[in-house]
Length: 199
Image (tube, rainbow, N blue to C red; front, side):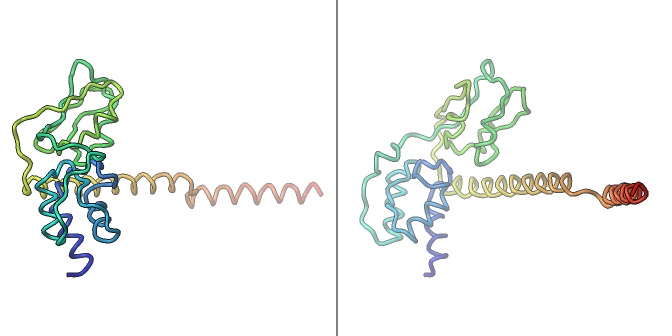
């Protein structure tokens, strides 16, 4: 199996919560670190014991316990925003990996629970501490993980498109238009002519 194929196989076994508890920038980055750099397979708290066992079987490694330095295995929970405390700052939307938080600046925000991966990144981002993680009885499955990965990739593509559009907009403001360039050239030419006559 090629390195790329093995990374994909490892990534397929990860929960795709994109929580970064493992110390890497998302599940795919952790998969790369496992395959390319020998990172330990027991750093994924959301994947828990089953995830570690699946990774061990794939990579022909011994099963080990979850490293408590990277979290503890807990039941799946989704984020919920307390409406009476939300100030609409939108900081939570900037860190949500799957765009599961909806709202507009200075207005109440809410979580689309079916899109929430339970990553908890929004908790640290919220300045009002108005987000709670609520267990809803759901057991995170491989199908949930793959759906979450698709949502994450789509959200990343939208973010990249917005950044590219904003970069293009700023560059167009910095670059003088041809009409403006022509006008400036005319003004400079007249100024040179005036200076020449004075001499």
